[in-house]
Amino acid sequence: MRLGVLDIGSNTGHLLVVDAHGGAAPLPASSYKQPLRLAEHLDDGGAVGPAGVDALVEFTAQAVRVAEERGCAETLAFATSAVRESVNAEAVLAAVQERTGVQLEVLSGADEARLTFLAVRRWFGWSAGRLAVFDIGGGSLEIAGGADEAPGAAWSLPLGAARLARSHFGQAPDGSGPDDEALHALRRDLRADIARNAGSLLRGGRPDRAAATSKTFRSLARICGAAPAADGPLVPRALRLDDLRERMDELVRTAPADLAELPGVSPSRAHQIVPGALVAEACMDVFDLPELEICPWALREGVILERLDQMPHLTVA
Image 1 (cartoon, rainbow, N blue to C red):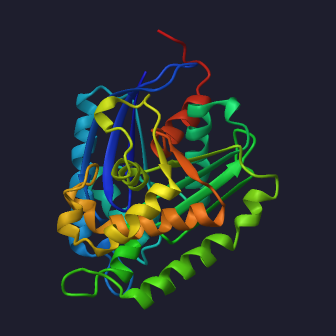
Image 2: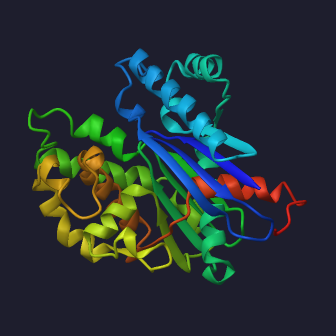
Image 3: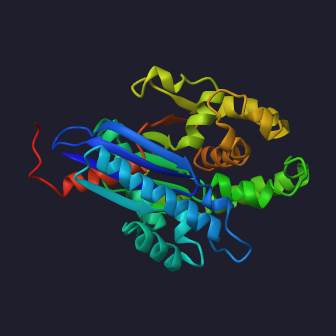
């Protein structure tokens, strides 16, 4: 069976098409994505503006056409924090449905964390033991952990890379971001926010394995020496705290245009690398983790896996 999953994220709209069979890993067949940057295009009142709505509608309509062309029997469509937290979320969802026929499901932050955890658990398997998972998106940070397939703790914080880029790194004319004092305050605040619920993850014991998903973590790992994406998803990759700290001062001092020249960094996300690095460093500090293994599966795969679990009639072709 061919399934599509349409992910309206805070940074990007992404349609992933997979061939799915019961008892087998979803096999990617096609991918279509476009930068939307919804988290950075909210107006001062917290609403998605007309241009953002138009971009979302246009992308969704094209994604539907791609899904049909690729033969998807079903497309699972959802939106995350940028739509979820916009003050005009209902109007945005209504516009998408009226103009494209697609009814987007808005995932809660806890559901984002839970489904991402499911994907990571399936990727690493039971041998991972007690697992901790971190995902830095455009609008939010998701954290989950536990010893089972469903996490014992899962929560979301408004600490996405695009959100922080907009709130803390968009004021200087050259995009250079906060000065040393403001940077110190941001680091302190990030740790306090992340640590507030840390006990819910650690109460059952320290994780045996800690993993990270998302483009931000993949880019940071690549900057710090991990294998390139071209080597394939089965190559082990990790982000080590010592390596990140060695690069942090350089990253903070580098202009976004020059950050885009670093390996693994796309020009559209270069301005998010420093805030993303600060969040990653804070996570590793708060939970005392020397490294995070990079998992190629994340929220989209979690949505697909949960849907497959609801369809026991599927058999291997």
